[in-house]
Image (cartoon, rainbow, N blue to C red):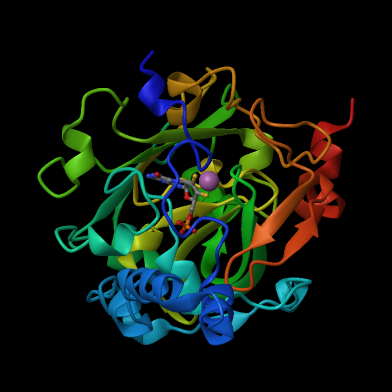
Amino acid sequence: MSREWDLPEKDVTPPEIGLSRRRMLRLLAVGGAGGLAAGAGLWWFSYQGSNEEVLGGGRFEGPAGDLYPGKLNPGFADGGRALTDEAEAARYTNFYEFSSFKWVWRQIEPFHPLPWTIAIAGMVARPRTYDIDDLVRTFPLEQRIYRHRCVEAWAMTVPWEGFPLADLIRNAEPLPGAKYVSFTSFYRPEEASQQKRESMPWPYTEGLTLGEATNQLAFIATGMYGHPLLKQHGAPIRLVVPWKYGFKSAKSIVRIELTDKKPTTFWNTLVPHEYGFEANVEPDVPHPRWSQASERLLGTGERVPSRYLNGYAEWVGSLYKV
Ligand SMILES: Nc1nc2c(c(=O)[nH]1)N[C@H]1C(S)=C(S)[C@@H](COP(=O)(O)O)O[C@H]1N2
Ligand SMILES: [Mo]
């Protein structure tokens, strides 16, 4: 297995790691650090892109854009933390199809998430392929504020737009033997430069147990911050499972399949001893190369304690009781 892929954050360290935009501005304001630091700071600052570059680069003619924003679900109206600034979330994304660095917004131009279809297939009585526009019009859109926790120990709080995964699965009528749900992202090496690299098991895949997938927290997002998803966040449709590390929340999905076998998954295939199938947020279980006890909030850079199941034990805790 190529050690090149033995990564997140710690090995492949883009210059903005650990230094939020706001902190950098503060550092520049201090000025005492001298001209060299100021020069480096200005270079760094411009390399980050303006908010408009970061957001504008990811916008496209999203499907059913007229339907946004959805109605805020009162059960998920409070993320328990301040919302992450939209541009800060869009500036710092993981999308390995386009880049191993966080500035995916710089590489995303060739990606054209329309037209798009998504199939629900496998062990279901009613398999179906939806055009993305029909899908968004079939399931009523709602807005939910969720915390997101990456295995690399950064976090954000985001208003997603979409519908419960359970509704999509119920519509397809699972067959009795179905135990798992697999998610497959797109494969378009002509649009996604990193998919030309054969050292990675493209397309990106993820999986859940059927019990996890039909829990009310598991969410299909087609939008974010009141409009269709930006390309770098996994347009036009992605998974959001907020009690698990972020890599479980597959982006730009083309296929959802019910099976009786545990699906193979992207990160588990690449680095099995570091990224498991279950991948629940567990602050007491360190990653082999770093602690998971605390996390860094995008935007402010603040460090806060991590919580078991990312604080969602009330919803999903019973799935893991022995
Ligand atoms: N297809 C695909 N899905 C993916 C990834 C990816 O590289 N490719 N990265 C994952 C990781 S590690 C995280 S933390 C989240 C990040 O979502 P965001 O970039 O929209 O914040 O997407 C996940 N889904
Ligand atoms: Mo992640």
